[in-house]
Image (cartoon, helix red, strand yellow):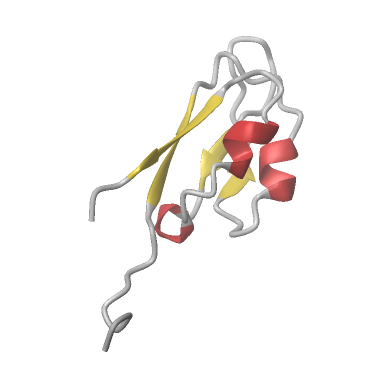
Length: 79
């Protein structure tokens, strides 16, 4: 079969908590619900996101694109 062994693309979300201002765009618009808002504070006094379900990340990079503070980076994991 031509497409029989396709595997979903996996990504890893990296968050720079000190650049985050806690806007929540990444949490709200992640299509796979990978992120959630942390109860901890960063150095600026905001609640940064954290990766609650890393196995769900499909490397769509939408969180990276929507972040106004460039606080998120997504890396594609080798398969």
